[in-house]
Length: 182
Image (cartoon, rainbow, N blue to C red):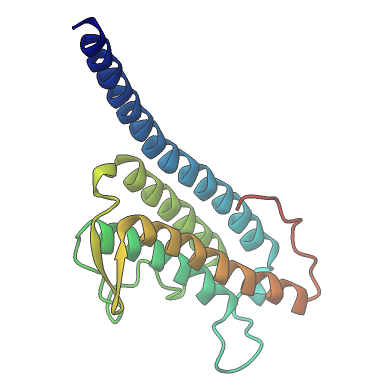
C-alpha cells in the first residue's frame, strides 16, 4: 500500500511539473518572440532613418517596390497577420484604406506609422491567448497554426528589410551593422 501511494504521489508531482513546464515554455515562446520583434523594430527604424527622404521613392527596377513601399508594406503585413488573420478583425481594404500605405506621407510620418504599428502588434501578441497558438487556419491555401503565422510574420519583416538594406547600398549608404536576433 505504501509503494502504490508513493507511486501515485510521484505520478501527480510529475504531471503537475510537466504542466508547469509547458506553461513556462509557452510564456517563453511569446517573450522570446516579443524580444525578437522589439529588436527587429529598432533595427528597421534605424534603416528607415538612414535613407534620406529624397531617396524614399527609390526603386532599382520599375517592377520593384520603392524603399517607402517596402516600409509601409511591412506595417500593413503586421496589421494583417496579427489583427486580421490571428485576431479575426476584418482586413483593411487595400484599395481605400490609406493608414498603412505611403499615400503622400512624409518620411517622418511613415516612420511614426511603422513605430506605432510595431507597438500595436506587440500589444496584440502579448495579450493573445497562448492556448490558441495551435489553432489552424488557411494561409493562402496552406494549413498553418497561429504560431506558424507569427514565424511567417517575422520572416516577412526580415525579407523586406533585407531588400531595403540593398537599397541603402545602391544609394551609396552603408547599412547599420547587423545585430544578432532580429
